[in-house]
Image 1 (cartoon, rainbow, N blue to C red):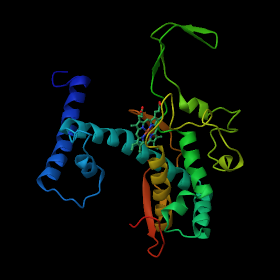
Image 2: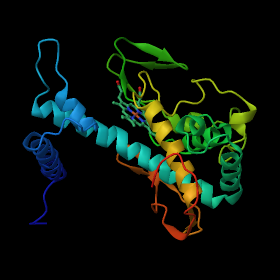
Image 3: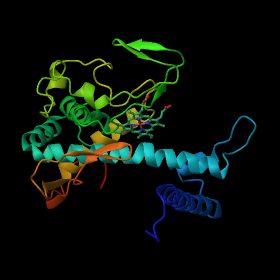
Image 4: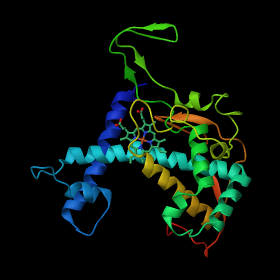
Length: 264
Ligand code: HEM
């Protein structure tokens, strides 16, 4: 046991490494300023408050950490699930391709973002295994009764988005991936809420937009196959509910002439 470090020390060490990497990025922007850069870090660094003060380095690091942890990991995991489902069920992939082939302008991101079947695939992806499985905790400020149970002040409640999304009365055959359910019926935010708890995700619109454009671009440009045809199981990975084996995919062909909303 001698050489092992405890999880808290390991966590602190990793956080320090991460903060150092982010600081190096901030330092390099300061060293080589370029007013033409439009990326999020450059915009954050040029922002000032009403007194003309910019964000401090720690504040910049914190913003980048939020984007990495809340923004990147979640959307990347959702996209991994979407790629899994569209290749585990080839008929879903073909329907997306047909919709893209029949739409007015497959190079226009706004057109892609409005495609009904593609949107339904994204919704079903986030319904069946919601990437953020749990809502943020809420703390009872006074004693409360719920479903016949008594809870005291200070009780902590965490909503399980996954369990609601698996309700048979709302979603018949809940373990079946069937995007059509979202074309047949409108669900209220009480029944479908991959982005919400007591508060709501600030990245909802961005993440959905990213998912749609990335999926449309990948399916138009590439032929992929699952490296492993066995069903993927969901597994907790920190805050996210991710595919246990990571969705290995094999590139089998390219379609260079394809028109896509994103240039690759
Ligand atoms: C598929 C992608 C995503 C999913 C499924 C997702 C899901 C969630 C969920 C369930 C919450 C908690 C809501 C609550 O309990 O009240 C949340 C909060 C949050 N998300 Fe996302 N998210 C995603 C992408 C993003 C992106 C792209 C960003 C940033 C660009 C982001 C930033 C945040 C932030 C900052 C919060 C905390 C908001 C607050 O409490 O005020 N998320 N997200």
